[in-house]
Amino acid sequence: MPPRPVRIRRRSHAMITRSATAAIRKSFPFLQLAPELRNMVYELCLNLDGVDAYFARYAQAFKNDVFPDKVRPPAIRCTTPTVLLICRQIFMEAITYLAQQRLVFTHGLFAQRLSKVVSTGVIRKITHLTISDSNLDMERSNYPDSIQGLLALFREICDILKSGHHLKELKIIIKDAFLSWHIGHCWDAVYKCGFCDHIRYMLRALDKVRGVGKVIFEGGIPYEQTRRLIARMQTQKFPFLKLPTEVRELIYNYSANWNDVSVKLPHFLSDWKQHRKPRYGRLTTPTVLLINRQITSEALRILHKKRFVFNATESFQMLSPMASPQITRFIGKQTLQKLTHVTLNLSCGEWVCVIQDLSMIWTRKHALKELHIHIEDELKREMVARGREYPDKELWDSLKHLKHLSGIDMVTFSGDLPQHITGPLKTEMEVKHQAGTKSVHESSVCQESVETTSEVTSAHPKHQSGWTSLPFSVSHLFESHSKS
Image (cartoon, rainbow, N blue to C red):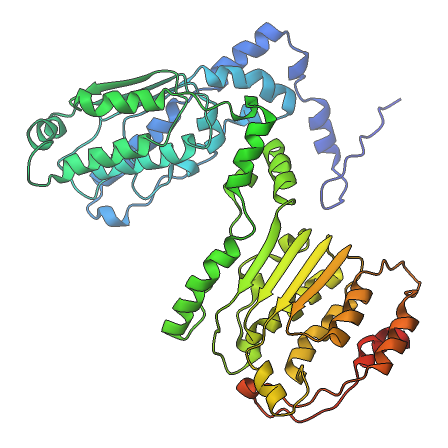
């Protein structure tokens, strides 16, 4: 009886042919070999000599071509040894032999990046690394086998190693006669030497690497310049997680703070007034939250206990509220939704637009336990002296969005807002709503608001842009809820 066909589907859900099925059945059972035989195969497969051989072919192409600027890098088949990409078991068995290999560089970089020749994961796994200038031509400029190519190699390797590595030995050999002459005669000279400057740039790049078991310098670099560098590179990483929990919490308290927004805001406004064009910076994450999962969870626990205080005391002097600075350009929406204690100090009436932006974000999702809003309007006295009602339509358009917020433990208002405005808002925001149910306080609050109706007319004199006097009642605060 013939064997059953193997039903294997590709990503396109097409059946594999009989020839492909036969090839699968005839594949060599590598994992069934004895461990000793598999280790011999790993030793033959894992060889890093091809990395330096690749750059040797690249340098030879530059020497043979009349127009070096048009030379293209040789083609690359793979950046990681194929034996490490088969399965997890083979990877775990073969990686020990990769770590024993010595990676040697005797050429520099030019147009081709190192990460496209050998993967960064392989570089971080090796334990022995040697960088030499034995095949470099230092007298030639704009050439991969020159001092510029060597500097590019140092920079890229150090950028990879500073994030993590397993190096036990790092050997750097600088013995080129032309370069050694410049180091000996120009290192401490008054004038500037380009070759010595390149060597200093290399040493600065190496200063970022820590935790190397042994660092060796061979050649004409002064010992006084390498002695301190070797000590720093051989310094082991600080065991931060072995510190007591109380000490780590103190560090977290200084490392991340919500209130950096209030520090950056005055600088942003001064720059805005000078150039008359908003130039927002990029949103960044504190480094302490990017190290590992344990440190992130511990730091967030401390960070969430901090109160977010937004101090807006300076006028941005814009004619339209739509052109006002957006708080989400200083702190992300997801971060705002995770805040628990918030204080908004709006000492200028122009900043009430922030309340509208925050209300729309927190209506979808929030973790607020305490919210305090302080509003000072410099035009309130002028409006009251002229017999106008306060607040005006523009301020009310921002405050009315707060009625959609609920489930906050404690809400407080202070400043220039009247009690008949803040009272209903506070009651509604502190109500714990349930899905499909209405607030138990809604009817009483609506009745109270109807009795204390106050018509709000007139637009903000400083921001008049065609507003008309539109009287309305405070009972409109819960109009949408009552209709629903």
